[in-house]
Image (cartoon, rainbow, N blue to C red; front, top):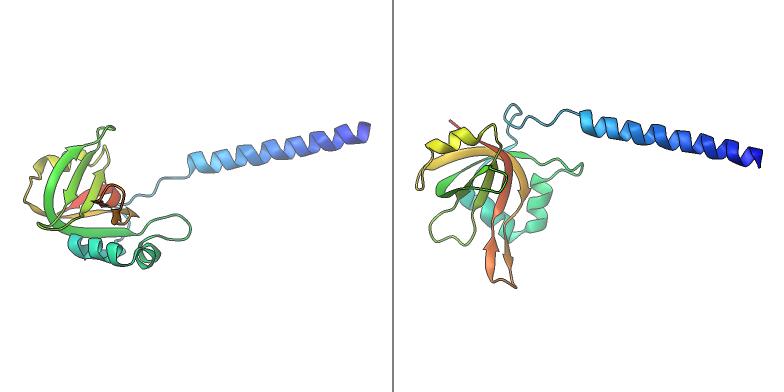
Amino acid sequence: MNKFIKWGLILLACGVVLGVSAYTIIMFTPHRDVQATPTDFKISAKTLVHETLDDAIASNAKYLEEDGNSKIIEVTGTVAAVNEDMNKQKTILLKEEGEGAGVNCTFTLNTNAKVEEVHVGDKVTIKGLFKSGAEFDEDMEEYLDVNLSKCDIIK
């Protein structure tokens, strides 16, 4: 019985060390600075929407990395709406007239102020992380927009 307790305590100690190590790595790894990182792709909102609607698998392979990080893209388009989400983050919808879907860009609390200068109808370029592509929801019979996060307006 003494040998069983000894090995049990060793395994418990190893588990605690691994758990604390994983927690420390996750909590103290610096967040990705999207605005300071070079852009991977520059594309129009209309082209991005059609690319993701036409072939979701290919567009996900192109804009999403296997390690979970998204590509950083600059999207140029016409502002169709300016809103604020429940987290007080500003959002801009880039959508061309007559299109079913657009590109929904969510800003951070640090970049919210730049949205104040933007109005519906303006043509802007926004840099952010690709999160998901556009798709058609058969049940709701409506298009879902492309989503970008950690966005900022490029001047």
